[in-house]
Image (cartoon, rainbow, N blue to C red; front, side, top):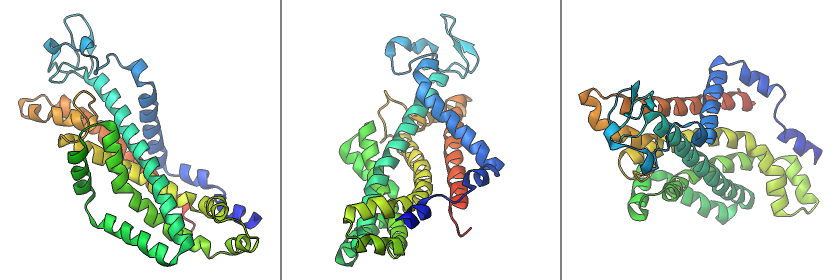
Length: 294
C-alpha cells in the first residue's frame, strides 16, 4: 500500500511552483483578506446593518465621507435604508462566502460519493448514476436555481440547498473520471487481492488520489456559487432584504445609479468582482501546479 500513498502525495515543489506566479500570490492575499474580514466582521463593522435600532432612515443616501447627525462617520456612504455601506458590505461578504463555502462543501461531499461509487462499481450502477448526472447538467444552472427558490422561498438555507442541487453533478462527473483512472492502477488491484472492504479501498486509497483535482474544481465552483447567489439576490429570489448579501446590495442601489449615487451599487460590485476573480485565479493556478501533465 506504500505505492498508493506515495502516488497520493502531492508532487514536490507544488507550493514553490504556486508562489512563482505573482498573480496567484496576489489572488491568495486578496481572498485571504476577505476571509479574515468575514470571520471578524461583527467586531470591526462600525454598525450592525441588520439591527433596526442602529439604522436611522434620516441618514439614507449619504455620500462617502459624510457624517450622521450623531457624528458617526460613513466612510463609504449609506444606502436607501440608511445603512452604513461599509458595515453592510462587511456583512455581505460574510454571507456571500458562507453561501459559497457551505454549498461547495456539501456539493463536493455528495458529488464525491456519487462519482466514487459510479467508478468503483461500474456496470448498471455507473450507467444509472451518470445518466442522472447528464440530466442534471443538461439544464441551465440559473433556471434550476430559480425554480427551486420560487418553490422553497427565500433564506440562507434555501439558497444553499438550491446551489448544492445545481453543483453536485460537476463534482460527480469530475471525481468519476479521476476515480476510473485510479481504479485501474496496481495498488487498487493489490487492495482487492488483500480482500479489503470496498469502503476502505474507496476512501482510503482512491479518494486521496482524487483530492488535487477535487480541490481545483471546488475552488472554481465556489466562485461560481458566489456569483450565482449574487445573481439570484439581484433578481430578488435569493436572500431576504433583512440579510443583504453583496448581490442584494447591488440591486438596492441599481435605481439610484442614474441620480449619481453610484456608491450603493458600484462599491459592492467591486468587492464581489474581487472575490470572484481572486477565487478563479487561485483555481487556475492550482490546476496548473497540481496537474502533472502541465
